[in-house]
Length: 496
Ligand code: NAD
Image 1 (cartoon, protein in one colour):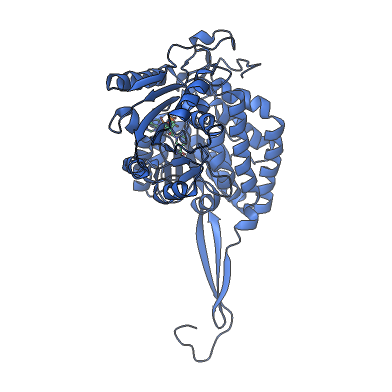
Image 2 (cartoon, protein in one colour; image 1 turned 120 degrees about the vertical axis):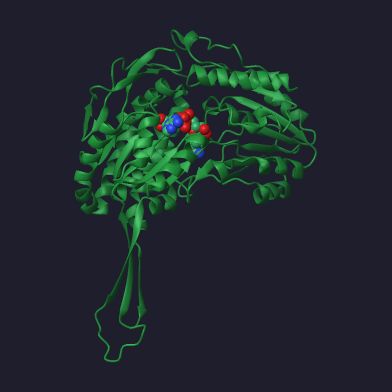
């Protein structure tokens, strides 16, 4: 439930450069609109090369000093930030909810997940120890990791606080300067986060935030002084960013969209499973890359579907589910439903034309749709193949687990898959055969907890490695190998 939501901005917001908010002169501005009410809550600048260069100037000028700050002192900034985030979680969650339409509870959960990665960042000094070995008599090799320089993180709308927290703690503690380019639809949380890094003691200029859209992303990909780019967003853009950034010699990792499958067996726990399955696709109003929007029932699961329907019908918008990011996304979701109906789907729960009961003034102008369940979907239908990114569950009925896996495997994405069952054998079968990076058994949103890292497969990720965990350390650093000899043999052979 949203409460105490205040409109905190209505004017132009700025970039965050060298520890200060700077309103860019001459930039075009785009309205920031609250999904809850349709009200304009600010104006986001759409910056280009000029503003990026200004941020680069600061990032480059402080890089060496930050790199040369001992890693344990860099980690102290993260420790202090953790306390700041915990102490201000209500305000941060309100901001996330205001700009992206989440429930307060969902917004808090995202912030807490970000704090988990922050805690991982705090422990990086103990894990980045490198290696040392005497490789021949009198000759030693030492491995260490060094920061890359100025790096960039480009983030999507759906987790305005959490996704920046996937990259910032690890990139910063490893000694990089970072340019954060948040989604222009939700720029406020990133600005707040940058201010908190400063309050936590991060030197000015080490983290700069530049706002913008596609043009700025292109400039980041091409910029000769940016050493690495991480991206999280839709598959089409992820692929383009990965291709463009690597073409200009950068290290790149781009996480894309998803189409996750949840396989349900008739023996799934009848009390626990139905709600969990519905929650997977309705959490964050279905706007998360881990939502399992395709339910594949194997055999007769009617008793479970009946409970899912009853549970979905009990939802109250604004209390049990938040809003959709913008009008265009809402129309897109509604089009998927219309098309599925025209192609023979059976509408079990229709969330269209619903409004919150009494949450906020003006909420009738927000972007609302309730949980929607469509039965008898065929694998070839658009709703079964494409990412809907809304609270719409498509049910495909099959007779065997093999058929279910064939459908899952034939999808180009590969973020997550899950099975609900009370038996070990089908669970093992799905764990072995699903083509996805993150799997769940009786868990509808199988986000790995740190230190197990986050990242999918196939068209859900371009580039090697996951975005958090040890892979994050690897991504934001480069290896240096030092070979040393202090003993000088009289008759050296090839190994000495
Ligand atoms: P998006 O691709 O539209 O935008 C992501 C970022 O790219 C934003 O910063 C935006 O400014 C920029 N951008 C948008 N269009 C661009 C273009 N044509 N060229 C260059 N840059 C562009 O994604 P979104 O709508 O903000 O976020 C939702 C998508 O993100 C969904 O597909 C979702 O599955 C995906 N996502 C994936 C993960 C993951 O871990 N795999 C996590 C969160 C979200």
